[in-house]
Image 1 (cartoon, rainbow, N blue to C red):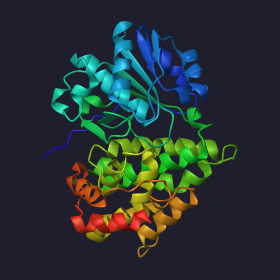
Image 2: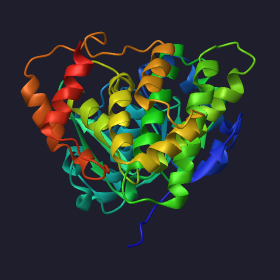
Image 3: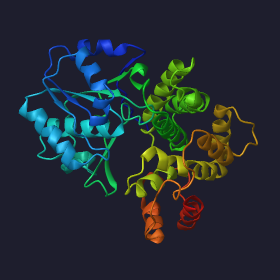
Image 4: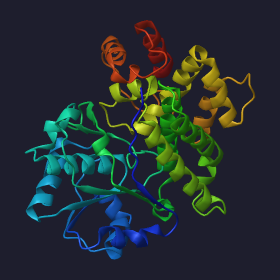
Length: 368
């Protein structure tokens, strides 16, 4: 059966922000971002590149229905017809659901969570990523929290793919090294799990393998703000992030099942994925050895290299924590966590769905 993929118009390259006014034309645009992006000076930079009818800068770090609904109100109050989303995954996911709620005529973005069938139309959306990992600019998925401490609830629809992805590496030149590390590993996880996901797809799989190679080769250099290789490395990571978003069309796997279940506390999603990825990738490679071999090759590893060990060392070299305890995760009911991991929808597209015993062992290895 044919698989349908929808990817955005891609505007890519250093300085391409200058083309934003052309993409907008005479539209009445709402700029959605957050206060951290504003403090970094990027909101002013984007505002200088195009005219906006309104701005909404109060997207919370963990995106919520309340935050998205406030942005939706701003869109309607100012009679906007286009949304420009400037930020990381929280901002882009918020904007995608605002665009869908506006186009569909929902009273609240919460009406769309877990209900892809409810997405019937979307307002035009231009996504401008300011990290190198979320992939939300090219993925069909968006998620919000009912409250900041509750797990995110996602919606998957081809209609949620932004119309335009404007990827300017200059916008991540001042991104703190720890966020470059966390978001780059998030992109790596999308590429790895998207590549492993069933069914295979030659074009998307090729993008995913290229993204894997780019993250492994460029993450360290991208973290050095004034390094001579920094600009090219960050551009390569942005390409990997876009590839990871495309790979999400196929599906993800157990690293994301773990990260989403453990996403009920104030820990960056990329950090959670980084903790889970070495063990889950090794598990998948044991069950699908042919794909494991291609992932090793993309990373430049020997045919007999241990993927889990390599990823653990690679992630550690980027300064990310390697256990949930080190990340500050507070355990309550481990059995409940494992049950939720087993029930996760991410297992549906994984070539091997870990059992209850598998997830219990994975969690035990990650918690200390």
